[in-house]
Image 1 (cartoon, rainbow, N blue to C red):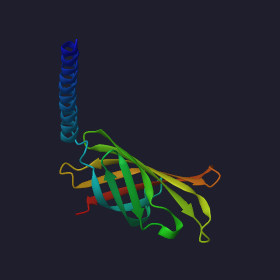
Image 2: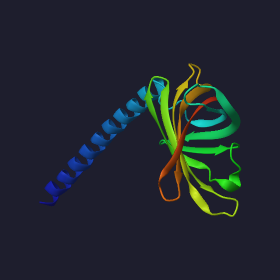
Image 3: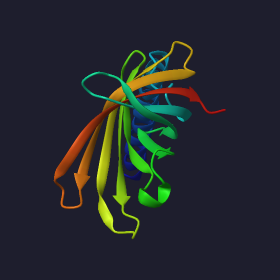
Length: 166
C-alpha cells in the first residue's frame, strides 16, 4: 500500500514537472516572438517633445518637454514640464503593443489650483510608432479634461516625438 502511494506521488510530481517545463517553454517562446515582433521594444525611459496642436488644422499651439517611462507589464509613468508640478500629479497609466512597431498608451493625472484644491483630471490617449532601430518614436492622440465632479469640460489634440533617454 505504501509503495503504491509513493509511486502515485512520484508520478504526479514528475507529471507536474514535465507540464511546468513545457508551459515555461511555450511562454518563453511567446515572449521571444513578441520581442522579435516589436512587443517589448518600447520599454524604457524616453525624452519626449510634446506639441499641443489645433485638432481642426493641425497647427502647433505650443510645445514642451516630458519624460515618459514604459515599464514591463504595461505600466506607464509621465512627468511633464507643460504644467507646473505643484498644479498636477505625474501621469500614471498603461501601454500595450498593437502590432509591428505600433503601440497604444494612456495615462491620467490629477490637477489642482494654486490653493491646492482638487480641480479634476486629464486623460491622455496616444498611438505611437517606434522606428525600426527602436531608438525613437512619434505619437499622436487626444486629451480629455474633466472637472472634479466628473463632467468632461474639454478635449484637445497633441503629437510627440521621442528619443530614448540614455
